[in-house]
Image (cartoon, rainbow, N blue to C red; front, side):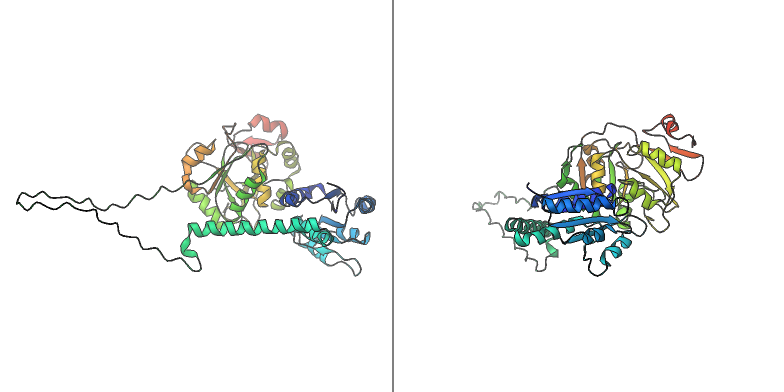
Length: 425
């Protein structure tokens, strides 16, 4: 690839998933990047040393990704005359606003460009545009990249108009159907016993059966980026999808979209008095949802997550009322590459319940999901047959002793090995 043109420096390994996701999104640009984890507060000497090494290696623009106080972009800018783009990261209860303010309020003489919270992709694109000022080949790739995005939108628009032609700005007038020409009729006998020629009623042709919702087949260990992105986009549009987990198939939607959650309840036939658990992708997300995690519980989760264990925590006071109208919420990190990819791409907790009508056995294949729900599910992500026949075990840690509310894939004895203060409900 040649010498790196963009130097990406992040303050914590926990932010790497944002960088990785952004690099995948702009992979077609073939950007030449170098990356380093270094903290402005904990390893300032490493930061300064890497900046000099990056300049010597040919880096032309720095992208600094940092959360909370977000001193890193300013430190980088103070050590170089190259452009610096800061990316504020959502890292605590302030949801990245503190990092954003830190980056955009640099002192005079320390210029740092700022993009949106978690927007590493836009930072890379801005860096590419800066470099493209004197790189004709990169400018061509950027133009093609933007055209591809425009074409995608136009394709989606055409698909929308095909499904809902009456929503077009200037709907095309319906074409008048030509009357079929009458077939010639033989002359009738004039006698009283003349035969009667019967006419068949004009029965319109049956409408074609509606096409079933698409099933997307993916490799369970290495799912395609395009499939994951398509499912995540559907979730963000408020749709219901079916995804594999480490136990059985689940019906999923955006937990922050109340309309989508109500639709999920309706499709499953589940009473809204019964909460729907959340699937998340990291302990970092858990820390944003749960203010205080008991130390022994955190140690247990370090061992058992990702895995088939749903843990009941106190629910955030002002959040997620649609998935739980009580004061508790179930949360887990699934041990499933496909599910984690969807959650990460959607960038929010998903409301996920087993893919079966209430009272029926959970679906273990995509075809079973289709048999249960047909066109009620917008996309079914097919990763093959699920090996586990059991749902996740549910453990409440609201108060001690902690209580197993449902014994599933993880047995009571296996939990007791990791945490002693539990009992069966």
